[in-house]
Length: 64
Picture 1 (cartoon, one colour):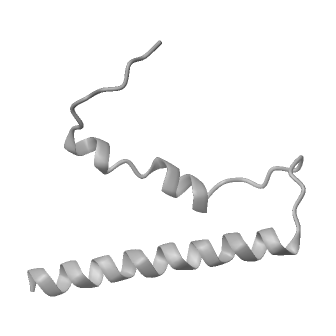
Picture 2 (cartoon, rainbow, N blue to C red):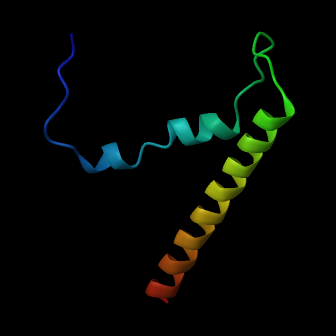
């Protein structure tokens, strides 16, 4: 069993593997899909993109 680390390093906060996996994963043929699920995931993707754009805007505004 792996014990969780008590001390988090900076690199632990910048792991984007799950985020990129959410946007660029292959469709699972075994998973049943319906309209509500597609719309929910579409709205989630849009909200993540808008949030990241806002963070980049604030960062740009702060630096320049």
